[in-house]
Structures are given as structure tokens and as C-alpha cells.
Image (cartoon, rainbow, N blue to C red; front, side, top):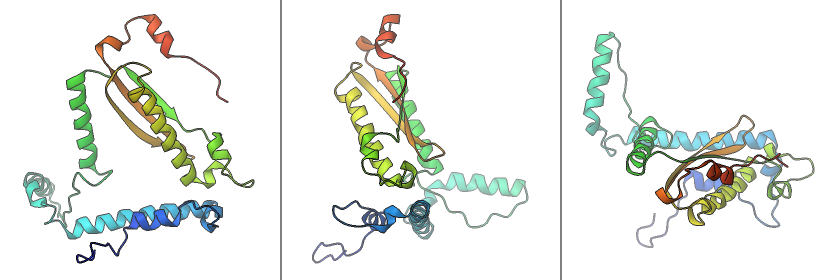
Length: 222
């Protein structure tokens, strides 16, 4: 950053690749027509992004105050002595590293704190991406399928997931929501789905069989 003008003259790795795969009107982007090569390009892009994060953490252990994890380091050294194994350089991932063990543990503890405060969740709902959504089909070329455009599928899914959560949390179609949490997973073909837990207020909790029938229905998909 130029401290005199307060203008940043560098971009991050995610910003660079986000610009590369941005959808622009009346602009031809050859990446979108690469098929499996486009998928491989995205995998390499994320690998480069994660390697960049790992390099920063490895070179800034003091800045990240890793010495505060002294108990963990003592435990690792104790295990190495008991097993007569030699410990190499130790690099600890902070809780801010998305996907790391400490990050996942922190999320788990946060969710358990919600359960202790608001009680067990009342609704478990899975929201699944449908590759036949009109918003996806209308943007695909004649020779393409949904797996050729993971960027498009992900964007549509996230927008629909946001609207789905707004229906439940803000518009309160099931009643007052005290707490909720969701996790996004991916199927083998790359389709996203979200597992959601919702905790209802005491006045809106499911208490009778009729309440279940008012919420649950079974229909054949389109």
C-alpha cells in the first residue's frame, strides 16, 4: 500500500483469480469454454492461494505468537521423546486458518456454546443444489453441462441459499429462530449442499404430530 495516497497497489491471490473468472457482459472469456481444463485451472488457483497462506504462516510464526502455544509444543516434544522420534520444524496453524484443525475446533466449540444457551436444535434441513435450475441452464452454452461451470453453479447456489436462510430466519416461515448454523459440503460431481440446524423459540417448537405435517412434505423433484 502507498501510505502517502492510501491507495493499495497490489492485489491478493483470491482477488487476482476472482478477476480472471469474473463474468462480464459482452466480454469473451476463454476460461469458461475450457471444460475440464477450466476445472483444473480452478484447482491450481486454490492450491496456489493455500500455499501462499501456508508460506505466510511458516514465515511469521513469531508475529502470530505461536510461543503462546507452549503447552502444545511441550506435549509434542514429550511424545517424540517417548517414541524416540526426532521432531523437525514445528509450524502451528492459527485458528484463523480456514479449514485447519484449530479453526474447526473453534467452530465446534462455538456451536456447542449455542446449544448450551438455546438448547438442542429443532429442525435439521438439507438444502441441495439442483443443476437443472433455470438460472444455471440459461447461462450454459449448448455444448456445456453444469460440471463445466463450477463457478456459475456455486454463485447460483450461494444466492439461493441466502434466500432460503432469509425465508427461515428473517421472514420466519417456521416461527422465531433463536439460533442457527449451517455447513456447506460438496458431492462427488461438485454439486453443493448445505446442512442446516435451526433452534426455534419455545412458542414455535414442534409439539404435536400436526406441527410435523405442517412442515414436512414429500414431492418428486422436477
